[in-house]
Length: 144
Image (cartoon, rainbow, N blue to C red; front, side, top):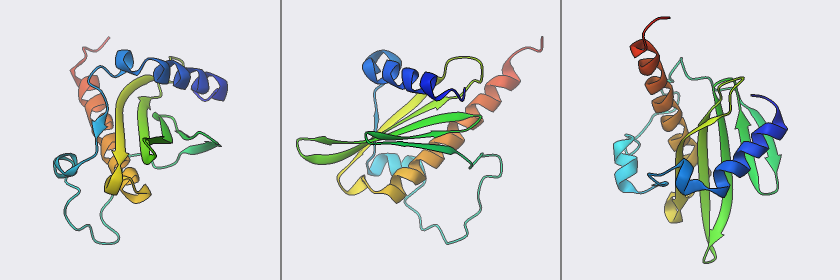
């Protein structure tokens, strides 16, 4: 799906009823999540990248959010404030071409965890996780 009007409509649908679309709620970025994602270890410059992860996104900037779109994913990154404290919400959806996007994961960063570098590292880890899950699921489905 690369129709930006439809992408925006899907964002409004997701954000309008998050408990329905993300019943498990937002992942809260904290030490436990960073440990689970193996982001607490020093990563040397030029670290080995996952060659299967598409890194090229079309970027759509709007005053209220940034949208990243490629053939596999649609990502919405929305800065906000809760009780005057900065918060960043990130929603990750599978881009299924001719079908509506499927919201997979949402996470929220606040306080010391709300830096652009950390948000992007977490985003990368979740994209890899979703991609690996989709690959595994496709192998389990019977051939038609």
